[in-house]
Image (cartoon, rainbow, N blue to C red; front, side, top):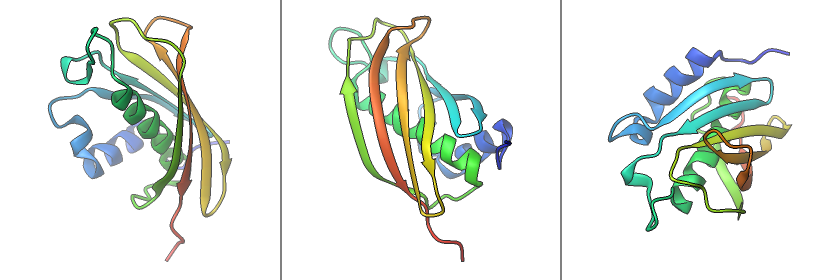
Amino acid sequence: MTTAMSLPETIAFLERDFPQMNHDGPAFHLESVGPLSARMRLDHHERFLRPGGTISGPAMMALADYALYAAILANIGPVGLAVTTNLSFNFLRKPGPTGLVAEATLLKLGKRLAVGEARLFATGSDDLVCHATGTYSIPPER
């Protein structure tokens, strides 16, 4: 099984249609896309920190949502109006003062609905820091 868009095509689409994600400089890095999957990294940066020096919950939420969205786009093609309809997060442990990696997997990819999970890890660690699930609405073809 192949993807509808390659890694460079998916990156180009995200950079063109969602430039606000890296407004203050590159921080979200799409590292791979595959059948029903994507891997994205978030840099450890002051703008994402909470007191204590670790990446904040809202930054983790953005990473999970963005990684799931990238997995969907890579697999259906450049559909900018696919939207998040539900996100659920379980914060499992405090990450150290490092970046994060999201491994996104699509559990269902239909014509109108996609459901997936994102597993977030601290860079260089196998310890799961956050588990997220998301549902996305895919607009009908016109």
